[in-house]
Length: 200
Length: 200
Ligand SMILES: [Zn+2]
Ligand SMILES: [Zn+2]
Image (cartoon, rainbow over all chains, first blue to last red; front, side, top):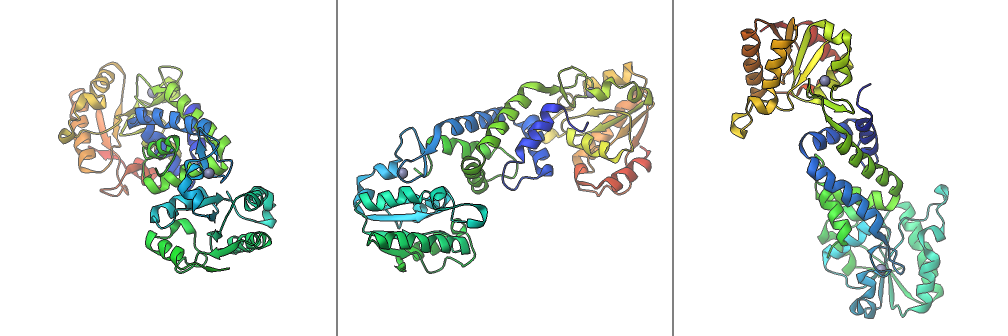
């Protein structure tokens, strides 16, 4: 056998991390066991704690801890903005927040429409979004899904929903490269795309 | 705040992994929480288990689980070979085992002599190695430390030890590129370097 049983399991399990294959998993396991046992213990605990503590906000679906509403959804300033920005993932919220250009609310799809993969409207929370469109006073819905085929299709679908509720819809623009991923764009480009958003 | 507290801790802790910076740590944490919660749980458990179960063999210092002697050190065939191969790390043992060319014993330094970093002979177990040279019937010591400045210095130091005990010493040769790392070499090259080992 190449490794001891626990080592083998650790090397297998590390390959759940994105971008980690057998070779880097071995390197990670060996580094942790040879040089970083304390940090490895902290990592194991942090992982368990995150899995236990981190759920989803009942309003925006972003990661939330402790309360059922995240701090963004509890903020009066954010609520009073009348702005609701639709993104695909929590990483997109982080990227947008870093621009400092936006201070409205979010709705995080945790995915995108993808009929081929069996991902329909309810899988990305559009029933919950429709409730919000009915109940909250939203002046403008900003579509910030990724400029990919599926992201665009999702944006069109949501724009239709919003129009049924006669809510103004815009799409972020300018500089987000077509075919790219929103959370890989630099802050300036992303700021620009917020300022230059257009009716959809 | 950019992340929730547990998420922040997880992203920090993931950066203990070699080659993982803030950006890939964020991507890892989000992927685990969004799509791979079961696998993340398995990973946290595998890490805790590995840290609890995996110690070092009392004879060769390689990773060992359960018993104080690893399976290699317990093998009669290996013991009877009279060969003892000195390597810097457990990854080197894995690389050498994969060649299928060697069936002797190992001694794993878990490092290399590095006076500038305060790493002296006892830190790499050379007191234990000397005991073995006295007590066991070793026909040949094969030096397979990395062909770096520190690896070479370590090899010279150990060759001196062995000569004091009138044990034949060889150094693996042929094809391990100078300045490279032993566990990055392909199997053929490494096989070759075992076959072509020379008196040291
Ligand atoms: Zn929220
Ligand atoms: Zn052993």
